[in-house]
View (cartoon, rainbow, N blue to C red):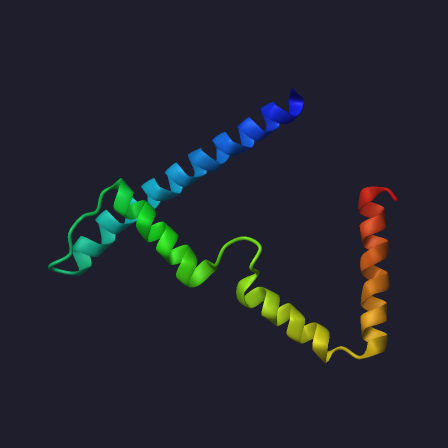
Length: 102
C-alpha cells in the first residue's frame, strides 16, 4: 500500500509540475511575444503545453537520452589514460560505497 501511495504522489506531482510549467510558458509568451512582435497573438494553455513539448524535443531531449551532456562525458572518458580511468573508477566506487553504506 505504501508503494501505491508513493506512486500516486509522484504521478500527482508530475501532473501538477506539467500544469505549472504550461501556465508559466503561456504567461511568459502572452506577456513578451505580443509586445515584441506586431502580428503575434496570445496563446492558450494547450498551445503552451505544445510549445513546452516542442522545446523539450528540440533543445532539452527527454530523460534517459543524456543529450549533449552525455556526449561530453563520453569524450572526457575517451580522452583519459587507462591509469586515469582506473583512478576515477576507484574513487567513484569508494564514494558510492560511502553513500549507500556498503
